[in-house]
Image (cartoon, rainbow, N blue to C red; front, side, top):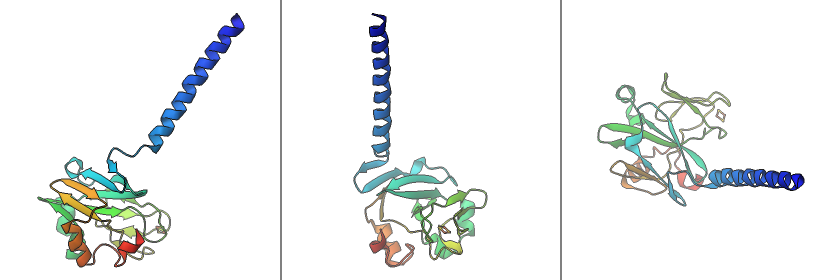
Amino acid sequence: MKQDRRGFILGAFTGIGAAGVLYAMKRTWDPLPSVQHAGVTTIELSDIKENELMIYKWRGKPIFVLKKTPDIVAKQSANDLARDIIVGEDHYILCIGLCTHLGCIPAYRESQHIFLCACHGAEYDASAINIKAPAPFPMLIPPFEVKGTHLTIGKEGTAYAKMKKAEVLGLKILDSTI
Ligand code: FES
């Protein structure tokens, strides 16, 4: 009788453990809340704080969104600003968060307003433009569309088309690289 009880308790714990593992696996596989459907990620820009790097996911890649401070904007060149998504008075930079040297994920240094890649020391400014070797070109801007304060990654809107025409996406042949 005692043996049966022990067996029952052990079975119950095993069942709970298995359910926990399945739940954890499901959470890992589930798309992030920002992902609406395959191939498209939507982001609410008004939720983003200044100088705080936000990282999302799009087609398996890390996506950086940074809201620049007015101070950063004031110090930047026309080249830098040409990569901005401007909503009202606010400037955002959007890019695929992969170093253009060998693909590591750079970190954002809030105090210096730069991205630093720890793998081989490349640096990018707040517009994700390479400022220190060995990064060969800026971090890439993925296709996007802006409607009000909603940013959709994976769709080509008018602001994206303008950047593409101005050749500021990071690489001229961007379309064939993502
Ligand atoms: S992968 Fe970033 S510097 Fe080499």
